[in-house]
Image (cartoon, rainbow, N blue to C red):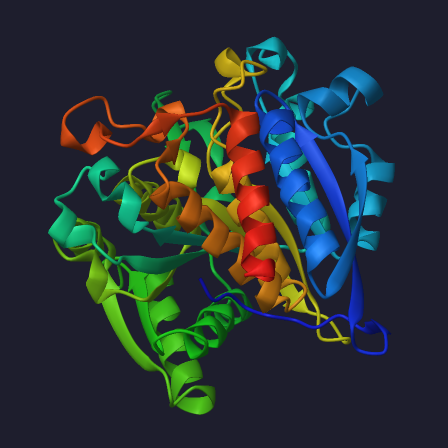
Length: 391
């Protein structure tokens, strides 16, 4: 699961490294799953070559309850001062009656904007022990390992003008505007090309250039960047409707996909069903590489806050644990620790441990499967991380 990497400075003789991680557990099952990721991080600190310091704060509805806003200025300052942010989830019925500007989700959006995060990275990996969980046939998804990179701060969701107006006849008209500047396209594409260099050196750019001029520009800019800076990367283009079909027909043809905000929103959710469970999907939102070579990032599981099961010990923590691995590789270049965590997850799944959402309901697939709690799953992964280094 190779992702864009960046370095952190050595702390002691090239042996022990340090990084600062801000934990924002958030709402619903967020605290449940982040606690298990911390359990795994403690094993990394005990067994690995690097040491990571953590701080905690609130975001979303939890922040509103404490601070009266979904993201406090001090929390934003903390996020900027840390090398990476691990977030659980935001949202829930408790805060749905709040004014739009105070709802939990506004805290997450403000966090992404304040940190300058413009690219959302979503790996979609099918773990061999979970082949049965995919909605597609095993032979179609076996060995699947793709990454969708979605532009996060532009496009149809942010373009102006927007809103609901009235025409000259008094009829209401809904307006949203698709806008992309060249620099927005270029910086997103660069993330994709850099990632492809660490993988299979293939990028597929998704657009609708035959009917949308803004995505025609997208195709031109991506093609020019590949010719000028990334001739070693094989670039193809695909219309979004065809891409949606191909993800179901033959997803293994892809490696890295790059696309617009709206198209990425839709396609990444479609890709999530290839893996069988939202509880298995990590994600990263990243920004520019800074002068010291670091790429700041916000890492979070794809699943929502699921307040109906919060605190019951049945949430799947693996997406959050894998988001931690994504952070260690992407923001800290700690491939050893990232691999140890990913290997531990696979070994735990092979041993038959499942949370409720990924457990088979019967038949041959249920043989040898043990359904465990959120806390037990985190403990199994942590134990397997120790075994990885002590093997």
